Amino acid sequence: MSPKLVVCPSCGYSATVRARQGKTELRCPKCGKEFNVWF
Image: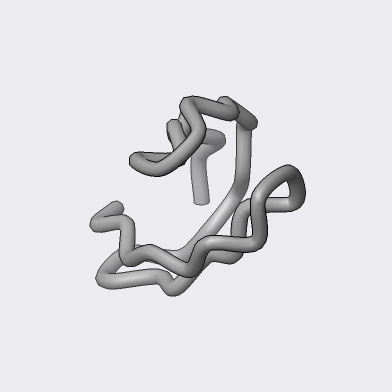
């Protein structure tokens, strides 16, 4: 598991997250939008 920078497609908030390989569902802590990220 390596850290990856993800950016919210809605508000542009960026954060570094650690996740396992595959599709991960994230919720933006700033605007609350849910989006999928591939690792």
